[in-house]
Length: 369
Image 1 (tube, helix red, strand yellow):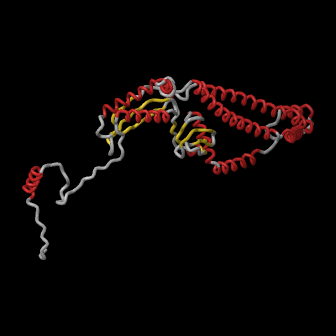
Image 2 (cartoon, one colour):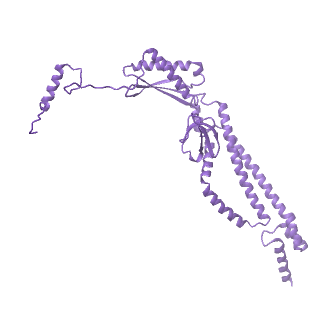
Image 3 (cartoon, rainbow, N blue to C red):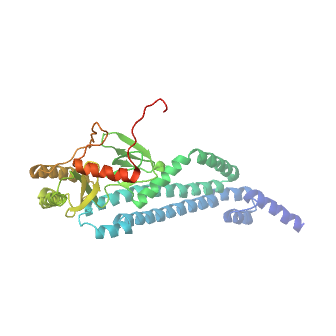
């Protein structure tokens, strides 16, 4: 009889509280009252709501902790330089390479975008897991749900590979600070000023005003013309008859005047210009090169101003900037090229040639030939 009573009690407990994962309140109420209905009601009214509340509270606490960690991480990004490498370049480079205000604004914008994305992803993951645990607590069978979600996730993953690639590429671009809004960049597909940057794509406007939307996942290289400092390179050709040292001296004087000009040397130029010397010996003239470090994105304006001043200085000094030239050789009736040699010198060279190779054969148009 005792065994039968224990078996009956076990069956009632299983019916009231389940075979596994029995709630503490359900077991205690069943032990006290022996009533399965009352134990089940206590489980639904007390035990499960408490567990669900604990899950939600835990999710909220974890969310707060993760958000605070992300905020600290992004604050560190905003406060620190873009990278140690860029910081070393900045210390060695010009003092005005990038103003503190511009650098601070750029870092804060990058950190805000990155923090917003990371917070959204973290919150979505935390509350998704919390929702699954709550569904399990109220008796929903999660096996088919998880299996269906897994199959759907695989299908979605295959269909959205490009989007995931764009997202990850944009994330790393933000972290590594490849470029920012206002920078002039070359993305391979197009070159222009960055107007908008998101994790999905980058919007740039080229010099003709065309707006390009480039997916981040398709950007294989980035050329940034606006980071830290730029360099203006000016190549000028002079005629071969020009005194190269004189021309280089005039170019250096023009560059020094530009450096001492308050409108240019104080704002656009970062270092005194330098004439490198002869850069090339071309088909039409001698190429001379001048270079100067400038503020970011100011190299083109500086190059145009230097070319204008050098043109004016060369015109005043009578130095010719060459145009494409070609030397033409004329031949006389005898078939020899025109030359400045005297008749005696020509005869001597012909005799020397005939001595080595024999006399020039006479043309014979006889019938035998």
